[in-house]
Length: 528
Image (cartoon, rainbow, N blue to C red; front, side):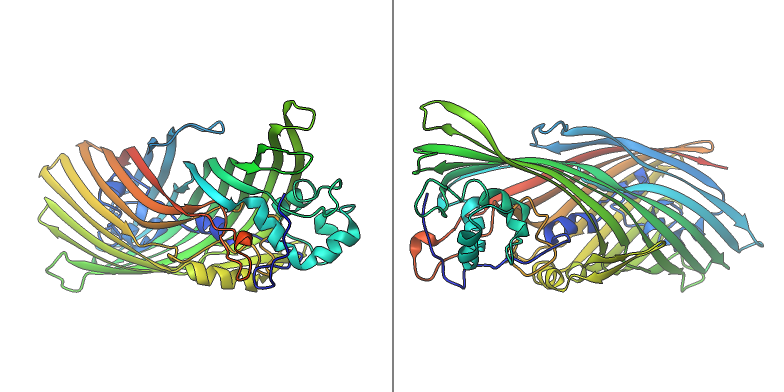
């Protein structure tokens, strides 16, 4: 056990905290490319082309192009390339992705008012993450020790007799509390407070679940030159992860006289609902030309969420009696509610058709994820929970996340009236800044319930798509394939450097990770 007194610039005093943190919230705020096989096969570039139900969640004006009523249902298979099954999850899963209908209501010879409902899986969380590397003079428990440096006097005063989060000014994260009451404190040592250096780490985690979006839409067609639409969306969040983070540590006290290991097992769920509103328009500026452009805007999704976790800290090593054993050192189970407001989203799109054989689509979306508003509940009323912005966490979010641009391009070619061939490309710019990190010591209400210290700065996303469509009387059957790839830099915890004592540094290198996903999607579409 290393003893240390760290300088004030390194130490991070802990305060009472209640809400959620940037890296978890970012996962809840983003969307996948998903919907009907035609929409996916064309890379999502259909916000100006319309006549497909999927743009209901981006540009609902596209539903104004329907001249006949329509019903569609979609499902498929999603698989992560290079992943390994862990935590009860599977790298390959069947996914129910979309179901909806459009009721076309003709007003006169050229005008329509259409009603629609659609469900689609806007976010599929299924992902497996594995990372392992060597490290020197660094560890997760060393970070917890540093966070409590300025409160060492209080630690001695309370002598470990009260839970860390019940001590004045010592309300750190749950993982800090678990370490402080077990690994960082040795009552048999004359100088009982210290930390252990690590030699290597390994993380295995399974992310599972989805966000389901239910959209209700009203759209219209004015003289086949102007199309408008509005939709109200309800979002249903089901997110779970189970992870095991292990470190090989070096011990030198009476409890751990040699090398030993610790494992943090973390089981977390996030559930809740949200709502948003989307507005859109499509204009055909030249009467004799099928060329058209679209504009659209989406309000923030206003989420009300609940997170709960069960976390354990266990050790593995050779103990003072000469035997090897596993010991459960501590466990925590917590639950709390918070709110999350995603950013506004804006979009522009272009569409053009050449005869009855070719359709071309191009689109651009923008959302500033640095403006995500994390909020904590201030008062629970009979009909509405009042909340306030977590200013410190929002400043961290602004410093970590950035505005994201999404580019979409797609083409559909019909060599025959009954057959369609589709290709698409979808690019999403990086959400995370390269120098972003998970700040474990900000005076925020987003730290206390944290049970993990790792973070990944994911880079840009590239999606390549293709598909086929077959017209069979009133039925249209479609199949699409999507390949998406995204790289990132993973860190097990945030590094810091001590300006006075080198051995008090806690520096660990980041490593490259990737998320490569394959999707095969089938859609059955019926016109009536």
